[in-house]
Length: 438
Image (cartoon, rainbow, N blue to C red):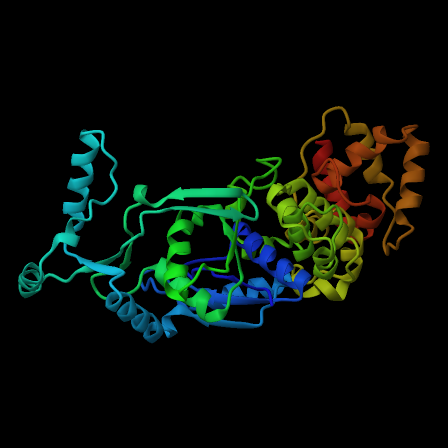
């Protein structure tokens, strides 16, 4: 059975870049009838926060992503400790006592001589007495994984053929001086224990692949039956539209608070032109196509506008401004890119706005103010009012509508004025027309 995993660090919010990796794993597992595991890489106590893990779970479920099981690395320290003892016993780990300053000095020394900064394995020559003396002096070693020195070749399902010469790679530190495992070691141990068959992740982790392959083989005793796939960094096809930050660093929670529907985010990630269910996406899912897709903010906003336009009042009532009515929602819903924009339009119909003075429209606006019908108003008020204005001013089309819209709403575009006017009411309409005519 195909088994994949999404392994975020609970050090902050879930961003669009991470959501893309989670979505890739979820769709890959769903397409093949496999399983996805959720693992929290929370061994870094200085960065991990308990609340962040639950927030990530909430954001994934909001996006429609689920998983078969979940666990946290902080609850598996005994498993890592047993693995560390095994690697020490089998001589795959060796102790090192250099400080960070000493290692930096070594690297500088080699660079000045145009030599590779790869670790020189000096600690392999350490005698038992030298080690005992170092520990007696209060030093505690970190432990490096002794790489084989061969050349590794493998096929990345996204990046294609890969090759790494291990002599050009420093023996990695797998155990810190305090005895805690490195992220590389813990990840491989968990992947083996969980039966992971495919590792789909961001390209920022690709540099660890050769080391992990060798560690897989050492711990499993055979060639690692794990397939790697690395997604390139997520790019925005139209940067600067709506959001100024790097697109991969947009927080899902922020988009949710702005009123973006999850289907619009998924469409923007996958390159779909329509809001599709995850079942539909899984049926046509292709990892290579996802890797090549760019996050299109305009597509996301366009789809979100269409989705919002289909929602009834009950679906959004708890996220609208206090006091907002169903009539208000029906008037504005088809013109919102983001649900948060409803706040501005509620100010237009129920709050206090100050329209600009409109040059050259004084006579028109004063006439419009004088022809405002008496209340109560219903949905027919616009038809009666605009008809009277056309007869009185001999203006039609945009020559009439543009100054009225700007005076009544403070905006050049927006929802249908016929729907907004009954909500604005006569006192507000009269006041704004007078201000704009001043």
